[in-house]
Image 1 (cartoon, one colour):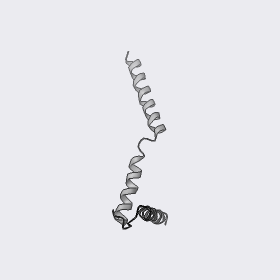
Image 2 (cartoon, rainbow, N blue to C red):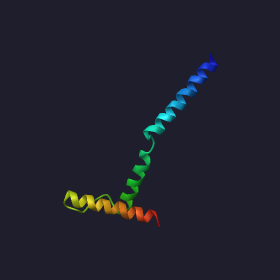
Image 3 (cartoon, rainbow, N blue to C red):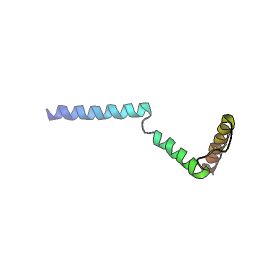
Image 4 (spheres, rainbow, N blue to C red):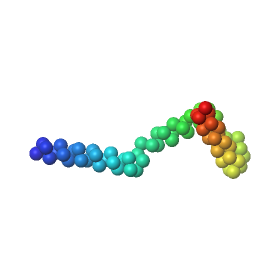
Amino acid sequence: MYIYLDFIEKWKTRRTKQRKERQGYGKRWAVEGVFSSVKRIFGESVRAHTQISAFQEVKRKFLIYNMLMNL
């Protein structure tokens, strides 16, 4: 009985781990960390007035952030 329960527990654990890896579970924290770093370096606000300009400004911030991280 105990051997069977142990087998089931190991099987469930392995299946859960495989599912999480397949679905990309646990990667959100890395993305949130990058967003936090960018906001700490450049500030939370965007100075542009139009949506297109704001998008370009944010794109430039991330480009500069990537350059800084690759020094």
